[in-house]
Length: 220
Ligand SMILES: *Cc1c(COP(=O)(O)O)cnc(C)c1O
Image (cartoon, rainbow, N blue to C red; front, side):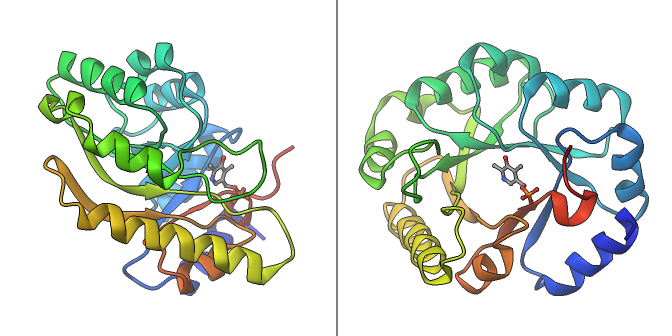
């Protein structure tokens, strides 16, 4: 199946209120352009340098989402153009995003990454840590970041019930954080679901799915 056909098939399964992030990590600019020519404008990358190189080469109306773990010293390279950072997992990282966004007179939208899987390897905060971050005085004066929601990854497993539990947990955390009504936050995004589990994520209340291999094929 071609990228074009895959994209059409994935889109056909998504309700209109769910935003599709086409995860293009390791894929070439030519492959990205194939999806672009079919109207896709939001692409996700997990490495800052790779995303920056693609941003330079590709049409400027593409919205680039950073979906991977972000090192603080790399924020400066993407601050000029990144449209959404999915993996905010500390106040220090958010402060650096604010500092770099201010240099470009931008406001950068961010998601708080919540750890919902049992796997040790997955990044993210507990609900308590996210609540503490929102409660801390430090960042409220930072006009150059806006928290717009949460992101999480379920355990990689065949156990459908487990995935459902983890996604429903993330959705519940989202609702509770949103209910805090913290200034500078505009909660509207629940980023959950990838190729293996996005249909489940959508039934659990996802508003944004991050899909790579089902569109571009397996990564080498
Ligand atoms: C790679 C990646 C995806 C997409 O994974 P696929 O299985 O290829 O759909 C989604 N989210 C994150 C955070 C990723 O790193």
